[in-house]
Length: 463
Image 1 (cartoon, rainbow, N blue to C red):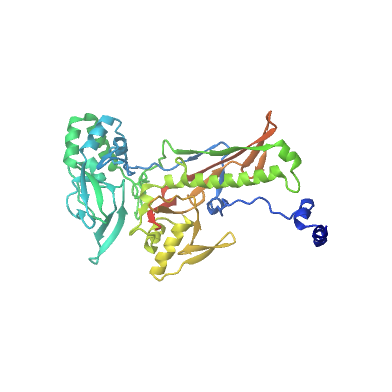
Image 2 (image 1 turned 90 degrees about the vertical axis):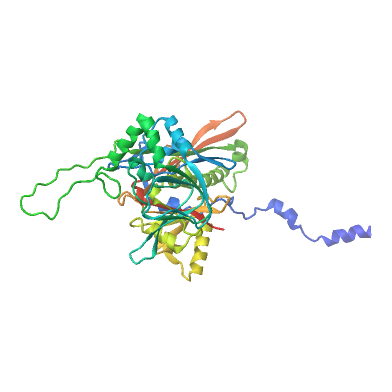
């Protein structure tokens, strides 16, 4: 009896644990870890595409094949995938897979340790060389007798392919190619190509047409030349000309990002205070949708920026990590670079290289925020740029806007049931389980108006 009285006397007021059951807590809206700054979506100038397709008209370009060669590996065997030989100049129009297969089978594999000279400047360029694995540096002798770096080639790149159209009279190497790492290369002697052309009239005709095409008058950008005259006096005969256009220009169709959001009517009816449950579900869904939009702009296999960089605008790091010289090389290949885009780990790797060189990052203002910069060009972080298991990634730089023939984003706004700019939320009904469904949609794409608007530094080592 005494113990019971003492226990009751000890509890003099309502406990906080019980009191919370009758109190309204102060709470936040639902939080989400996956939200990033999405600088790229904010930085791109967006162009409305009411018809769903955006056509990029350009001047006619004499575009020799210069893309990447693809390989098939099985154990120690490395073979060229025959259809990708169309990326070589002179072979772009070859439709006979049997001919391409015969060519691919004539490439000879060789291994070169680091430091091996693969091609010597001034020697006869009597081979087409394809780099299957490793890195090859190209240098030439400058005016003052010092070596001048011309670039670095990696897997899928090739040397000497411009001589395919003139296999009977090959030119000479204009640079020295040296293996920077252990390399696997495949080479095709031009005499083998001549032998195959002698047995294949179709291949012979393609090579002849490619030789004529290579001799067409064109600018240094490969565009059909506009004939002009200057510096003349008197009644000189003026050249006639016209500006030719691409017959089949590139068209970009808007891609779609969609999901169906489901909210049970019981939740919306009974648990809607103090926060609107449907509104919070939509808010978080739209955040995820915006993140996916940025991912698509970077990585989509059709219109993604990483997959639409012209081969001549792709450069490889000189030593692996991103150095100030590498970013300078990116900048010098285009005018009016607007910004870099890099994974945060690539930015950190570049900062380490700057520290080693005793250089300091610049800073720049971007939409009210202070970001890192190089040569006054902002470096915007974007975690949508992939990093391979080996620790390799890419750094992009771009000029933007239609007026500057740059990179633009494509979208469609003014949609039915628009929730926010470019995002529509359509009520699709209530099923027999009392679940309300909403179709959430957004449309996006990106276009590169001219090839030099976008450049990329590849094989960036962030480890």
